Amino acid sequence: MLQYACEGTNAIRTVASLTREKDVFEHYHQQLVAQGDRSLRSILQSSILYAASQSFILLCIALGFWYGGTLIGAREYSQFQFFVVFSAVIFGSQSAGTIFSFAPDMGKAKHASGQLKKLFDRQPAIDTWSTNGERLAATSDNSNVKGELVFKDVHFRYPTRPEQPVLRGLDMHIKPGQYVALVGASGCGKSTTISLLERFYDPLSGTILLDGKDISELHLGDYRAHLALVSQEPTLYQGTIKENILLGADHPDSIPVEEMDRRIDQACKDANIYTFITSLPDGFATKVGNKGVMLSGGQKQRIAIARALLRNPKVLLLDEATSALDSESEKVVQAALDQAAKGRTTIAVAHRLSTVQGADQILVFEAGRIREKGTHQELMVKGGLYAELAAMQNLTAPV
Image (cartoon, rainbow, N blue to C red; front, side, top):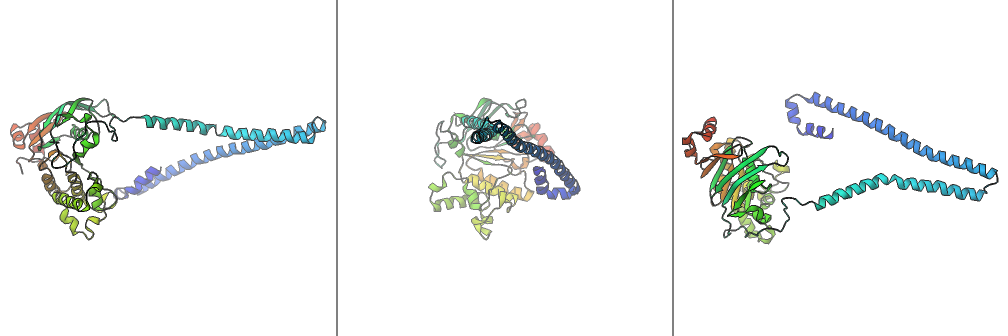
């Protein structure tokens, strides 16, 4: 009921545009009435039980006095003996009743402690805090990580949908510094490939290699430090622009302030957002608001790109980074992405083929496998699935 009210309030523009205010009100009113009826029955039942329990205590006291008076009248008990026995029976039974009243709570406590123990003993399949695995050098210009990625016969199904295969023997080889685009219909496994690269999941079978090393055998923190992800809906947190960009840095406290500021400026310039930030009255100290509501979609996306570039990643992952933007913002963000892709391995998932025409290699996914691969011109000449997708988007030649 509360969830329904919150949904209706948060989506008030949608409700108003559909003129469903009366329906929402009546539905919520009916829920309130139904909840009131259920609460009334529950209160009546609990009140009757409470009255009965209190009356039973008084009944026991009355019976005690009656029976004790009978014994005193028969000269079997003295008044002193009566009051000693009466007090022991009454107060002893009350104490016992109090103890037994906690029996349900003790049962709940035992169950809760068991659940906590089960939670603490649980070992996640991918442990972020684990110190196991081969360590990698820190991300820097002289890092020994090249960025070569290989998928070998990778199969995957989501744990929540084990009956639905997503990747079915995926084989893919991406050379260091190469710009590779993943295209295809929705649900063919493009974003799943990005999730597997980030090790949000592990493949059911097959291996994923980084520079010839199985990523499941690498130290997770070190491995992810060489990756940066820019998603379709960038997440900005309450705070300033600088604070949000700093989230992309590894151990920012260990770097001098002047050097960190220089890196932030350079990342913003590469992301084509520096001029906009410096034009604001508060500059980098500008508040972005809850979930970045003070910024436009293109501005949020470019800040997310700057945050990714601050890591100086060897592998840049772009998951539909421009699909939610208008044409003007898309051009600006795409220019920033093209600049960010220089000198690093880049994997871009895209529905708009116009954004990936310049890719070194385009992989066309279908049903969890790669059906076609090549450059834009090669695939257009081939006249296969990619050419069909391009025709539907009125795309014929590279931009």
